[in-house]
Length: 152
Image (cartoon, rainbow, N blue to C red; front, side):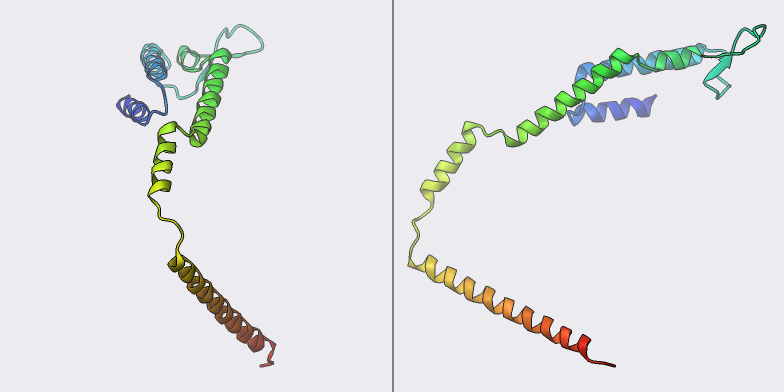
């Protein structure tokens, strides 16, 4: 139980789950542990037991522990929907731009100097270096092609 609570508190710290969801999960875990402790089949690892041995077709029924630990369909659908909404908000927050970021952009834009002659010289030097690097790569590649074409 202690490790489960540690995992839940870690998820709460990382804001993956809401405090309300954590409280619900802790209650569910406590109920399950209580039901498991009270169940007479605690030594049996099989989650189903057979009842009504006088009946010809023995139907397995779930024990109290497995019935309490399994959320109903409505809860499952609600959790799925909450997960969808949470992921949707996370994706939206990636693209959201608040006005403070715009102010920072404006400040940086104003602080940046205008393009000068030295910027053009630097760009020409960079272009020359890129063209030279491309020629070197093309030369090395052509040498490898010639080596492959030669018979051994």
